Amino acid sequence: MDRSAPSPEPGVTADLLPDLGSKGVSANPDPGQRLPAAAPSGSASNAAAPSADPFPAYLVTVDGDSIHHGATTLCPTDLDGGEVVVTVAWSSVNYKDGMVTVPGNRVARRSPLVPGVDLAGTVVASTEPSIAVGTDVVAHGHGLGVSHHGGFAAMARVPATWVVPLPAGLSARSAMVIGTAGFTAAASIDLLERHGLEPSAGPVLVTGATGGVGSMAVAMLARRGYEVVASTGKPSAGSWLAGLGAARVIGRDELDEAPGRTLGPQRWAGAVDCVGGTTLALVLRQLRYGAAVAASGLTAGSALDTTVYPFITRGVGLLGVDSVDTPTGRRTEVWARIADPGDLRPADLERFIDREVSLAELPGALADILAARVRGRILVDPARA
Ligand SMILES: NC(=O)c1ccc[n+]([C@@H]2O[C@H](COP(=O)([O-])OP(=O)(O)OC[C@H]3O[C@@H](n4cnc5c(N)ncnc54)[C@H](OP(=O)(O)O)[C@@H]3O)[C@@H](O)[C@H]2O)c1
Image (cartoon, rainbow, N blue to C red; front, side):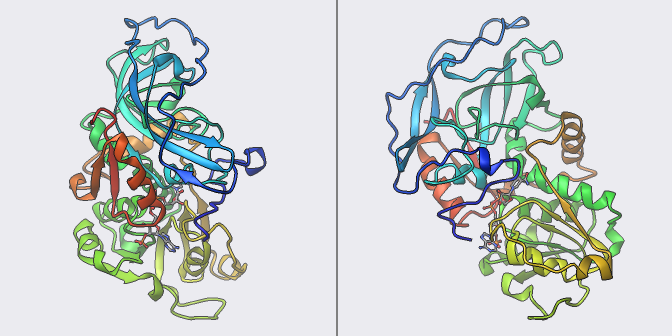
């Protein structure tokens, strides 16, 4: 995939997106940048009004053919509409956050934009009776960090339907170690199990295994008792992946066991793929009879060059995973599975942390995720100096 011109992300309709230009990028925002004030969304009926003080935020601004991005200060009136105001304790860096900083991207749907496709924190004001002040919540997907100011700020205002109260036993920090990536991994496993996958079925492949979705999938599958085979382009990450629960680690280049053949050996009882492109095509032709792959990403490309043979001669399934528009009820169900140590919750979340960054340190983190230099997850602490 040409990473300088990312393809549209799941949940984004390319035709509706603005052309954001095609040239330079800068990590120097206009520190004086102020946003248009949000329309009031009603009075905060079950809370004292949140602070009107300025707060730290990260802003991406399109300027002709260039994109500027960096830390700045915003006021609560700069935020978008919504019933719930949250003080953001943690956010995290996802691949999509990197994409919104690339000139010409077709992911960001506004400028200026506070990126951050996920956040966790505490409700400080709410006009929605079912979301009480003081509730710890997680929010991700929908327009967050794409068309609506997101998690890379100390404060966010979002529609009530976007927040899920944190399940018991899951802190805001743990929720962001998991984040959108872990939610997507969990939703992938949930779909595969609904399709019939069970631990006794045989080896389950995870591609892009050192990334956010991949590493979480490795650990969650291992937690469920599956035999996990992790595919990675980072040979040095073998022992880390084994520590997460991979029974075997293979190189990306070992995926193709029958080059040029329409169908390969029936290797996998199931697969979690966030890589797409030729990788997904290879996975499809190596699934066992009746098995399925849950596909969520496109780090290797959005085109899928395959044949119908895996489907019509082996009855395999290609299950699409979308975390963006997942209805609230299903979000809540998946987060409950994630939080349950007897189910999907990885044993040691600290192992996933590549590093913690402040808003000022985000430019390096965003560049790293675009260049596949991240192992696991990068946490964002908006209050950190
Ligand atoms: N559908 C949804 O709702 C949803 C939700 C979340 C994420 N996603 C998508 O899922 C993908 C992964 O997201 P993420 O946050 O986990 O990203 P990430 O942390 O950057 O992980 C992606 C991993 O893919 C592998 N990779 C990168 N470039 C590759 C290439 N050219 N060929 C083969 N493998 C490559 C790398 O793993 P190795 O080095 O270990 O191979 C990399 O670490 C992205 O496309 C993202 O947009 C979709």
